[in-house]
Length: 447
Image (cartoon, rainbow, N blue to C red):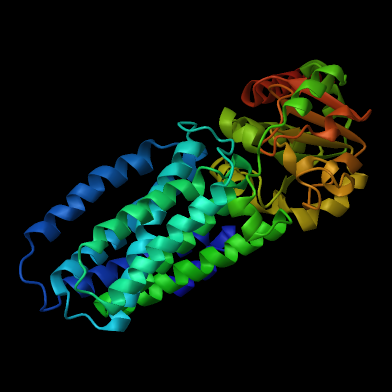
């Protein structure tokens, strides 16, 4: 069921089925565990679901879809902490009777569990703007980070050889917790999608190691699936940004350059009103809508869908272009547009939609920034050079809805905004979409 869940989650049409089957599989795993004769008493076990539900239900009900990346980061933190605590209890309960293989798996479980716990909390803080989303760096930081990790790994190896040195275990836990913080702090917001999937992989691998420690085959299977799928997704995300794991983890990508920020003020752009924008959309035969994180922040997905519906009723061919790293997690835009009931057949990934931009009348960019920057193609000095982008600059007219000229997560200005064919409509994405719908309705009434 876990395998089928992963398979069905890869397509929007079968995603709900995948979630349901995965939940049933987990329920069977839990029930199968609870009927084991090894369980002596159920008091704490009975209390745990109520405590977990008291946390999980409000997170599911009250957390908006726009905050889904934060919720996922917290889920990774909780799962990893659970694995680390189980490993800790197993160490103190059964040492020195654990074999070397079990101790090796336990060390990996605890190390990955604790570092994923604090790393996921740091990712949550950056996503929630509780922490600066820009990289926090200092000279020699990578050497310090790798040094802490090396000491932690060394302690784990020593405990395998000499399990009686139990006093070293708290030091291992502290170093793992510290490394989790140090690992994420220097990573900028531009890399958060990859970081989230990488932390997912770490949490899964920690769970798989826990399965070996507990001799629980379901944990081994589920953890291996989680770890491998998260790792593969991280690879896909890195390829989508034309970057390597080492560059993501140690590159401090997303550092805003002050010089670039100053240059923005000296260059002029073509600014448009919502009335002018509505007239252009009304005259178009084909419109490609490009959503980005700005749409998520404004919670404008419903109004964007309404705008698309108005255009479609007027005979305009409407499509949505989805970049794999748009937003703050893989599939972020797909989730938001699915919540707004945008038809699946109107959603196109980058490779499918890019050939259609040259014949498109209007490319409507709503809150997307780095994923539309032409500098990724030709400016070798740009931090995003080589990153595959949506070819919105090849459309006949480009319309960009944005709050300001502030750079995106990569910290570089977007060359698209200064092209002659580009019109900038400044304002909140939700309000601009609302105004465009109203203006189009008036134009339709006049016609």
